[in-house]
Amino acid sequence: MLLSLDTSANHKLIFNVSHEWIPPFIQLKTVQLSSCKILNGFPHWLQNQRKLERLELSNASLYGLLPTWLQNMSMLLTLDLSHNKLIGSLIHLPFSEHTEILLLQDNHFNGSIPRSLCRSRWFDILDVSGNQLSGNIPDCVENLQYIRMLILGSNGLSGVIPSSFGNIASSLQWLKLNDNNFNGQIPQNLRNLTSLEVLDLGNNEFSGNIPKWIGENLTYLVVLRLHKNNFTGDIPHSLCKCSHLHILDIAHNNLTGSIPHCFGELSAMNNVTEYFQQDYEKNVTVVDLIQVIKGITLDYTTTMGLVVNMDLSSNKLTGEIPVELTALASLMGLNLSHNHLSGSIPDSIGNMKALTSLDFSDNQLNGTIPPSMAALNFLSSMNLSHNNLSGSIPTGNQLRTLIDPSIYAGNKDLCGAPLPNNCSNPENPPATTNKIKYKKANGQRNVWFYLDITCGFATGF
Image 1 (cartoon, rainbow, N blue to C red):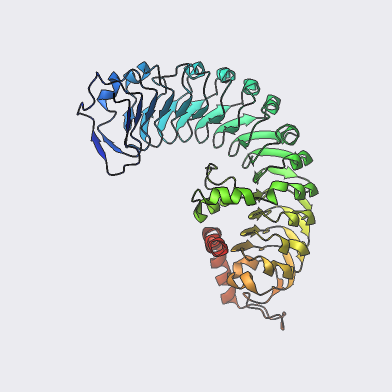
Image 2 (cartoon, rainbow, N blue to C red):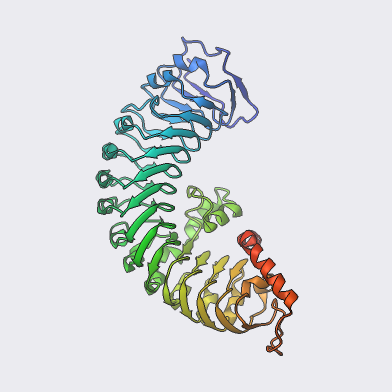
């Protein structure tokens, strides 16, 4: 007896749903039509399939409202409707106590998250990101006692994080609330989520200090993203206890104080060999890596074991760049720009062999550029502009490929290629035409800043 229908990933297959080509007497348990082109909406014959346990219609050109008969599929364990153009509320979805996986990301659903969602106490993965949902998160989320991944990012959700979040079982590994309108402080009850590997609260309106308990309780974190919020105060030294961190992004806040010297003890940023082989075999592309370093994509499923990135930019940090940071030999991206850092660039920066992107721009750094920087063979994107650096620009190896003068703009005492002023005659100012070129190049640098990484990193591979 036919129990399963799987035509997924057949991009040339086109279904016309007006054809009742699965008779009612055949009761399927699995239907997988992902990445096929389904014409005229949901297949009508599905409404007679009352024993379905797995329905996957991802990226199937579906559009419009959900059919009301969908809520009659009370046996569904897995429902995947992601990457379509579905609209309307989620009220007609089959939220039964049996549902384990619900994937609705990248559609056009609107309205609030229905409380009926909480009926599915066996949820393992819930992803409704990339929609137009609004309102608050219902308090009943504490009923999701077995959930492992809760992904609500890129919607219009608002309010504070319910304190009931802390009552979710400690099995929760991913919590992504990024790109919404949440406000208030991070509730202390989240300290109970001791198995968290990904905590993404970026692009919201959270305020207050970064809680110390993040480093003390959430020690398994691989990704911590708090960027573009309103956090204040110092960077807590307890974050140094997150020895598994691969991505630390707390940029675009109002943080003050100095960079913790103990960041040099983040061991996962010094050794990712085992993850490299594992993720490289998943066909992770250089573009994937660059997008995560730049912060374009939030898809850590294929890159978080490989990308190692630290972004502390656009805050109010002071003091010197800790020399201990140069011990992070696996760090690929380091962005400390737009702060108030002073002192010199550490001489041992050449030890950061994996660096592909380095940005120290818009600070108050002084002294010379360390010659060891020429040893950074993967470096393909660098910005040291608008500081107080002086002396000659080092040459050799990878630095010879960084020929954009805007990289060093705003350091009046720097000399040597690619700047027009020769070090043998440092008092000879650049011509007015060169200043105009600087401005044009400076306007273009944000466009090409991270594209250069691709060439450098591909060459390194």
